[in-house]
Length: 359
Image (cartoon, rainbow, N blue to C red; front, side):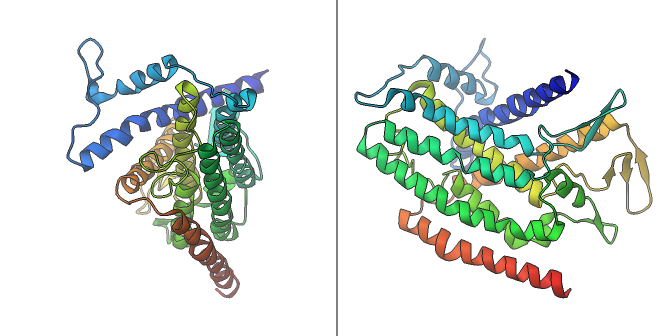
């Protein structure tokens, strides 16, 4: 029973507080950051008791609007599949977080609790297997809508997601070759070592090209600008054309959850995960010889805060890209994935293997 309680607590904290909270906040960041970049004020009208708090109450207003709008099902649609498609997409986006480590170990009453929902020794394989299933919700929703335009959008989305799954899978092999593990917790621990006692051995230093490839293909997998050809609302009819109310909201929120997921995986593989430079399980050990002893609880909190800070910076950067680059044409999206990113990712594997063998 204790193990079940711990697992439930980790799910409630990491998935329902961190992931959903971050995704909800991104609905505000997306508008506010674009407003700052475009010299506008941005969302600021929603208020409670006269307080606007920089427009943060728009998160609540948007949620209420989605819940209370008419839930429309088109004539001729496959009702059951039409209804469950958004849930399928969101489910697989959420369960992928089970293998993401957000701290090392918390010791409570003599019991060691690994700060990871599922401590899998094949964590990265699990994450990629689950991520690949999300395309089914998109395809099912597009087909079940009984709308030819939705079906075309679904075909664009499925072709893009399947194509970039190849490149994104190949882009991480260099990191796995360097650290010799597919266990994400062990991979993060391996990044805690120091070059010459000063510089952390994060994946980005070993695999800078792999980092750029993974981040690019990750943005394409989330169907976000400049890769938003499946759902470009301004000029392209998307796969969720017939969806309304909270079912559309689930598709929209899933895109943001997937953005958080890509940021978490990128941080885990390339930016040291929960590692904080010079922070060891017993406290800080500085390269110049100083130490600062800390309790296990304090160390765990600092590790989680370090993980959160890295994810936040990466999300900010992805939002900068989202409001800076124009949308690719569909042929450009496919050409980039198959003719440029995949060959470069394969070349990165060969170069990494050569360096490992000869140096």
